[in-house]
Amino acid sequence: MSTPSTPAPEPEEAGDEGGRRDFDEEFARIVDAEGIAPRPEIRSAPTPESADAPEDPEDPEDEVLLGDFEPPDPDLPQASDYAVWSWTALLGGVLLALLAAVLDSIPTWAGALGGIAAVGGLVALIARVPPDRSDPTDGAQV
Image: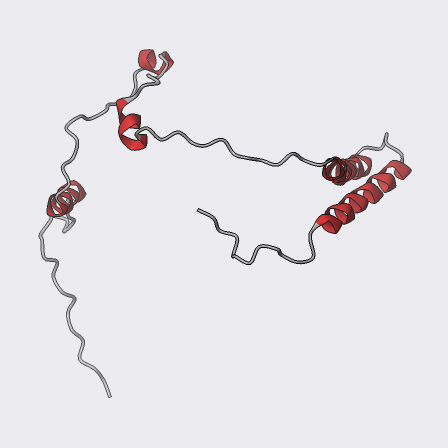
């Protein structure tokens, strides 16, 4: 049982002699169909003289995009001493263990001490995680 082969459909618009469409013309047609007016200004590549000049901090394009939006200051909680020492032990222990493994001038017992410190820091950080969530939501806040 064979199926008849059908020829590929012809493209709606003919392009140049190679059968390729002009992408700029196609894009302009799509933009016109959507009712979007392109900006009349075209920025050229910066010259070496203009590359050294600082950009204008009051760029009108930024004003259009951002408006009068001011990002709020994040309210970060103060880190506890316990957390700081746990992170220090974890990161410092890993660094000490790696340095002891790479460098011959650091004794082996220092690498073992770094490994113990890293494991201790990890255990201390995991011990700080609360066992249950007191927040009944999914955590997303707007």
